[in-house]
Length: 226
Image (cartoon, rainbow, N blue to C red; front, side, top):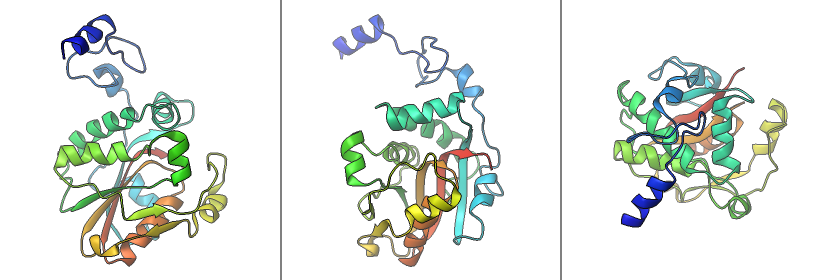
């Protein structure tokens, strides 16, 4: 611990956006940059994330933290977490979101938190699943278990960054599988992901969970503007 404190003294953590030295209690972002995040209001209900998923699957609640705009500061954070070996950024963003959600009644009657899975080859290449830290942060904030063994991505797909809505829908068709459905039958499952774009991935996963008899809700850190 003494060595760790010495390192922190010599090389203090900096805000990922403005590079100001972080003070006690600040994680990843200083309070000023936290306040500038492009938040989406309506954490409890009737928000843009829910509107994007209406009519696809019968979910209970849905929400997203911030607008995801290309080349924005927030998109830089999400990209760092996903592609630059900084998954802890997602953890700290989810911690911030959990505080705001708690004041809006979350986690309601949710029983378990489940991260959207990535294919095993993708996980081996990247070294981690960037959605798992989101689930772990919410788990710690709300005292709920994380279930990451049931939902699997069994078909490898290429990056969907440049795909349009139709291509994304085709890409996720039959790429996920649900194992041990008895673990979630009758439970209220919160599915979490980093960014909600077309909703194709969430739709596929939520449909599987619902087919096993689970009530479903969803949460993402980012929401692209339609």
